[in-house]
Structures are given as structure tokens and as C-alpha cells.
Amino acid sequence: REVREEIGVPAQIQFIIGTTHFYRGPARPENELLGVFYACAIADPTAVTLSPEHAQMRWVPATDIPTFLPNPHWLRPVITRAEFIRRHLPEKLRLAFRQNEF
Image 1: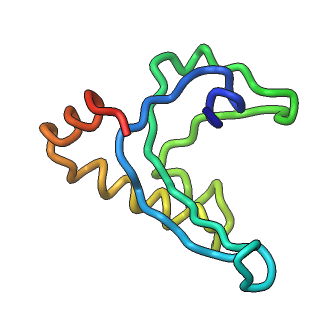
Image 2 (image 1 turned 90 degrees about the vertical axis):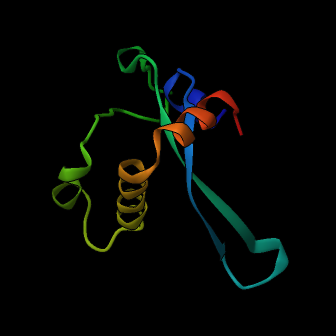
């Protein structure tokens, strides 16, 4: 849902990259957040239309991340993990994830 709101096209979840647990502010229950990172695919990248809150977008290969994102940046380990999983995920499991949405 969030992807569709941001870029105007649906994304298909490929696999879960990982989760994170943190507090936005003091460590109190009302500030507690659980994040889930998904690797997704878009059927037609040319169909992307940005929401008004974004001025531009571009596709960046994972190999360009060191020159694109500052170090440290919270997305670097997420992308590294996603690429590792993508390279090692058996095709049978990849297909099962596509057929049986989360």
C-alpha cells in the first residue's frame, strides 16, 4: 500500500529482508516501533509517477550505493542484506513467495 501511495504503481513482495526494533524518542511503549523491510519488484518501472511530496526519483544499482549514500547510512546494510538474499535464495522458494503473498 505504501509503495503505491508513493510511486503510483503496486509492488510485489519478493521476500522479507529483515526486521528492526527501535524507539522514536524515549524508550516508552508509545514510542516503540517495529520495522519490516521487504524486497519488492515493480512490473513496469516506466509507469512510476511520484506523489506530490517527491520531486524526483531514479533507479540505482546496488553496486552504486557506496557513491550514492553517505557512510554511515541506515539503508546500506539493508541493501547489502537484500542483495545477499537475492543471490542465494533458491528459485523454488522465490517462486513460492510470489505465488503465496505475505
